[in-house]
Length: 338
Ligand SMILES: [Mn+2]
Image (tube, rainbow, N blue to C red):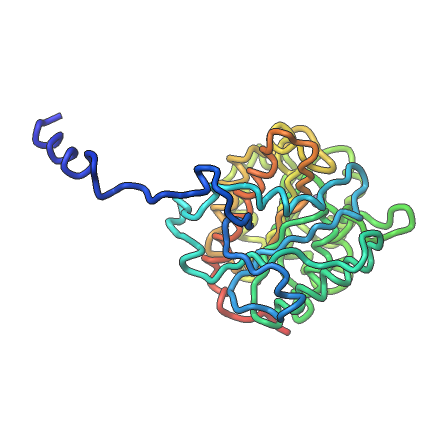
């Protein structure tokens, strides 16, 4: 290195210097209120004081009465709030969503019953309808995947939404044990309710023994990409297919963490070996920038099965990726049809 350059570096970066990182007390273990992605908290507001003014509302949906196998996703929102150091800056998009949009952590959906799935779904739909009426774009943390049905019912009532769905399972199964509302079937019910456009739906990362359960996906014209398709197409090919399927329609992004390989996200209800890497998933989400992403969710984090906390950490990163997509969405300022 030329001595002049070293001198210059010493002037700019030597101690004491002007580029010191501001003190972050939470990094020292100091207690701060725990919120999703560190957003300002406005907990309980939707229930008690009316809906606060914001553009994007992060909201927990701690409900897992719809699981077919391992329970525990009701603790997903709590686990994600304990994660720090995700965001605020996205190095590919070069944005800081919370500087560009008013983002709040609205707390959790309050539910009347811890035993009644149908009552929980009604409370979820009511809360998300109130957010939609207030012009707030919701970004939810589940909860099991059954929560996406009442959310779509609240958001897609005026016009059915498009969907980009990351999951090991299509979640379009019929009734199980005499009940049609469970985490294996929200997208069948959403199409039949008229709130989801199956022809503008793509399901990514599908695999495993439940394949015979997904006839509805094919019959309704959904685009289904199995893991073998992902291998063949690569990240760029998957992104191109997703963009072609949804076009410029208002689109919901639903991310079930079991799409990732259980080596990264063991803390989930129905793990399936042979899933996406976190790298692949993040690259795919990054590639969706510019689509009209109006809302989304990250679901099926069941922290009790993962003492390493890798599941919650990765899920928080995915949540941040979807927040970036919502921030970059060209339709962000436009209200959804009532
Ligand atoms: Mn699912």
